Amino acid sequence: MAKNNLQEYAKAKQQMCIENDTISNTLFDEYGVNRGLRDINGKGVLTGLTRISKIVSFAETENGQVPCDGELWYRGYNVKSLVKSLGKEEFGFEKTAYLLLFGELPDSRALEEFSDILGKSRTLPTNFTRDVIMKAPSKDIMNSMTRSILTLASYDDDVSMGGIDNCIRQCMQLIAIFPMLAVYGYHAYNHYENDSSMYIHRPDPELSTAENFLRMLRPDNQYSPLEAKVLDVALMLHMEHGGGNNSTFTTRVVTSAGTDTYSAIAAAMSSLKGPKHGGANIKVMEMMEDIRTHVSDWGDREEVRAYLSKMLDGEVFDKKGLIYGMGHAVYSLSDPRERIFRSYVERLAAAKHQEKMMNLYNLIEELAPELIAEKRHIFKGVSPNVDFYSGFVYEMLGIPSELYTPLFAIARIVGWSAHRLEEMVGMNKIIRPAYKSVMKERE
Image 1 (cartoon, rainbow, N blue to C red):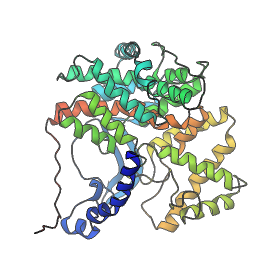
Image 2 (image 1 turned 90 degrees about the vertical axis):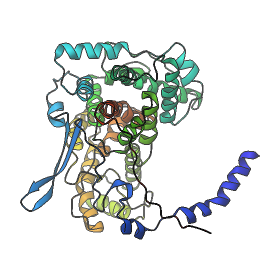
Image 3 (image 1 turned 180 degrees about the vertical axis):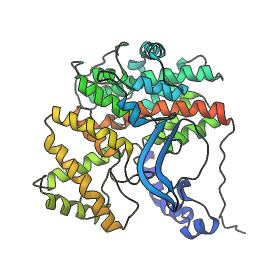
Image 4 (image 1 turned 90 degrees about the horizontal axis):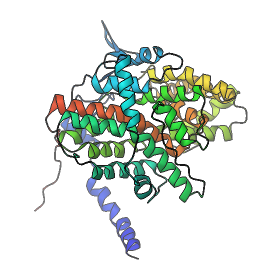
């Protein structure tokens, strides 16, 4: 009864909040305040300096800046080159994690030591899976993981001890066990809520992060080399994306306050799970399912174009007038991650006999930018982003949608950790932005 009374009270009061918390657009213009720390062109306001990564979307010319094909750099290395440099049977997650954390590519000995330590760190406290992860299973695996992260602080005798070495230890432990928190959280939910069998497979310290994820997820522990390779590349491409994305900035803001590693990473998780940040590929998958349902011939260019046009007009799907997976806040001509990833997606689609679906993705990738430019009068360029294909890959790998955003977190915790370390070493000043009060004084 109390809950119902509270719900009714909240509904009754929501209009007061809307009336008293709405701020006119004219005030933002009057005081020169950028909504969401972005100017009218979508360019982020400079709030810090970093050596960890760089995003390129415009090129300097005699006439100023012009859009160019996107580039993503990790610690001075182009991500395209990092992926291309991998051997056919070599995995890149661990090597790239070392690079982002410590600023240098590891030689074979350093990589072997780093991978060995990560492998041996893939352990949880005694009965943690039973007492924490399985205790209150949730369909929202991000919430389940965040609860586990904060609970792990209780098992760390040096949770609040300062020092870069302690932070490195904590970050590496979390990087190692994130796949376990995600997969075990999903299996607990799937068992208790969906009445399915539960599998709790221990990770193999000799395997890569991508291999262990698939091994722990699947009932039979089996996966193909191609499956593991494609997932590994996906993790590499999602690992870091500059300090300006919401969850990384959250990490730096919370870190600047002097909080512990577990709290900082939990805050980043809470940011990433937002549908405007980490849940984009789920929306792409929902959109693609809608297209598959309502377009009778996936290869008919005009029929697909007509349906996409209705989507942009807000007549079909969720009626928000968007084609999900198209466009990016930073990139214009192309998202380099999508360009790199597409060849791996095509290889996996061929292996899974999903060529027809791949052709549909390719057709939408071709048609959507034309339609968006035509209907929205956007001339800076619109291109598919990495989320356009990532959900398709996860679907082909048999990964449930509940784990799509957690997979993002499994990759991005490396970037968060690197930025936490850089904030502690290179900034050492609490982030405290200013807000202009537009409150009306009352008698």
